[in-house]
Length: 328
Image: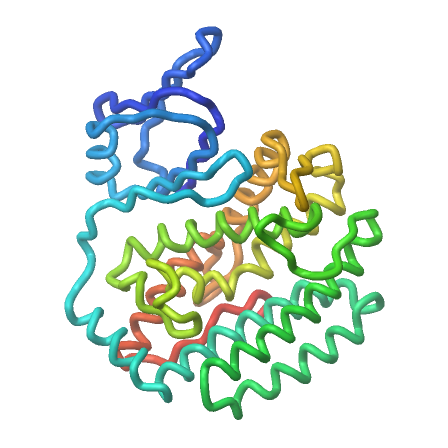
């Protein structure tokens, strides 16, 4: 199912079982959108709505996410949860409280994430071979870590090295990127990473919503720092092969150029035009078909949902969780 992105200012209303968008500008036509084929809605414009519209979203099970002018996440309307069970809540809690079982899941997530980073870098071996070797060396130390803090410290060093490699790659297209800096993003590449990661987190949350998983209990990230943290865990696996691949695509193909950004005090953000360009490529990437079980071809968004069900089967003791690797 697709994600609906709204960039038009106006009023969101319910018309039968569809979304009815009345643009603020009188010169623009109203838009009628049946919601059956959408799994989530992302709103980047100024909109108003009423309870009848929210009631429609609740009945259809569609979360809606709101972003400010700069593309930063503001909040969401998360429909009444109908799939949640006490059994799953207890299973997640027990796995979180047992450090051995928590580490097993956390390591599986990170190992998949790092393998996907290496997948992204492999096409640029001549340029970033040193970084590839160092990332592989650090990945080999995951297994002997005894707590989450130590695991995350290694992950931090891996990501620093990985981003250094990304900086070398995009530097060929005159985009400077030395290190991850956010709030606000320091440069154009940081702006793309922040925007892409934020959208991916909410795409993952929309897929978690379809399952019995409780989104506030996570294993790699600490669950006490934000309301929904399981989305961060699962998104970790997909950030390299979805967000970072889109970033390399829009830069290497000149889809997004320097004029698609706006400078603010001490930072840079995507412009409205830039956000539309990025979202278009992002959605193409989400719908990109990859091979899953038994040579079945499915979209990345379906793979994310499968990842949620794999985690459920692990929690139930039915099979060991192994994060998705692109190219296996």
